[in-house]
Image 1: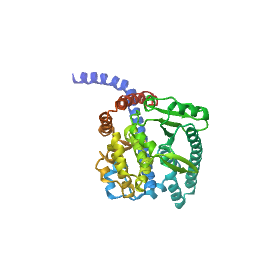
Image 2: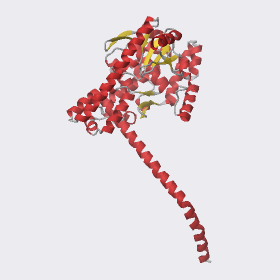
Image 3: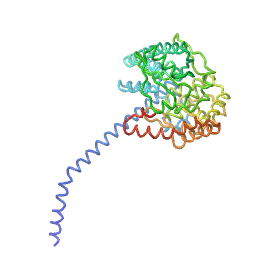
Image 4: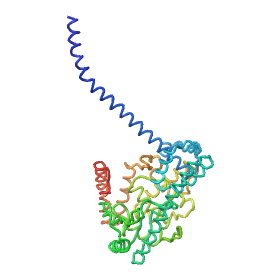
Length: 415
């Protein structure tokens, strides 16, 4: 009886082993492939984090206080190891570092110090590669500035007062687009751009239409020219700050050109709108740009508070500046000068910031959602019903953009 049971079990087990052998191999192969892909991904993450640390040290200084360790998850482990990071750079590492610097609009400001350190270390080949990269970027910037001057002059002569926003904030770096603001009628802008530069309108997303934003493709200019007409914000909900923007511009002299640019307070408001209320990520250029304004004590905090409060953005502004200050402190050992009015109004700091996909990502739930709600409530209390309605469309717009991103790999048609 025992022998018969064993025979039947053997007969029933053998086919199962035969039939499952291919499946078992397939599962094992998939597991190995998954682990390989995961290992490659984690290696990329480690490399990206290391590159972020190196760029931050080059831009902000490498000394860090001991309390910076508490922000390790948010901003990376900061130590005086710039020389170690540079000495181990391979050609592949340099290319990855350049890509991250380009994405964060800090290639000129970070690669100058990097080149000097490489030369001091005797790495002539890497230093020459770095210098070549900067020369190529300088050529791009010079070309773009020449076009920008011509465009601003043509629009001004056509009766459209123009302010260059965001793009020149990064100097000596330059943004990937040329961003302009005007109070003039958008139809006049389109006519001038078409007549003088044979410019074509790029496809407009739902967000572009709500924001009254127009993107122009100019022959001979790789960068898009992005014109905001009368409104700011992802849905064009902000009109109060545009009145301040037009009234408080100043002149910037850049490489022999003269441009009208926003006052420091308006620069901070515009940067906050883009980072804390639209993209929910912060670039290294945003940290360096605004830290410089604050270090030079160019910001009137009373005026900034008045401007931000009227637009429902003050808490977002205070939080944004606090994040910048804490990040700077983690790398150079001292924070930027902020008044208690700012630090006491901030809702969170770098503890809610994580480095992912090339940028410092701000936590959306619930923190950014609360900032959005405060902006909406302010507009409603002020009786700005049209602007409130525009802003109320943001959650639906964001959801549609997320779905399109998942389905098509791009959210350009929505966002």
